[in-house]
Structures are given as structure tokens and as C-alpha cells.
Length: 110
Image 1 (spheres, rainbow, N blue to C red):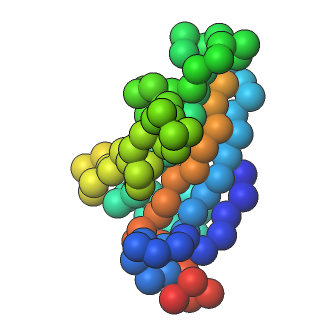
Image 2: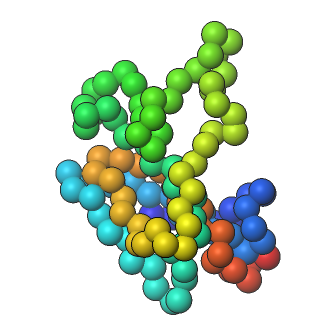
């Protein structure tokens, strides 16, 4: 896990958390210091069916691909928005990605 200030258009003080979960089970992420887990935007990258040798990639469960010109088909890349009722953060097994905590209010990121 690594954290840094989130870039625009995130809210002032927003934090981005990058992670890698090499385990075969989901991992519940507990945030300390009163850091709120919602609202947030999730970007979880996984291999289809957990097949790490697959030549495809899923972003939040949807295939990620390029257009005929070699550019990402969806821009900006859509994240999964999680509102206040969304609960805790669960990192999928055999995945990597990042989570943007828009309500973190980190003074260093203001």
C-alpha cells in the first residue's frame, strides 16, 4: 500500500491509496486515524476468472481495452463511485489498483 495526494478533479485534501493484493482472498482495509472510507472512487484491476496468465484485464469487473488507434476506449477511465452507505474497503484477491478517498481532508494535500 502506498498513499499520496490525489490529482484533480478530486476534492482538495483527497488522498489516493495504491495497493497490490497477491493473496487468494479479499482483504478488508481498515483505515486508522479517523480517515473516512467514504465517499471514495475505486479502481480495481483483476485478471478474468483469476487467471493470471490471461491476456485480458478487468477494471472493476468490466473488460479494459483499447480502440483501433491504441487508445483506452473509455476516457477518463471510469472508477466505481462508493457513497456514504458503501461500507468498508475490500480489496479483491489477486488484484492491484487504487482507491481515491475524496473526503480525507489531508492538510498536506489541500
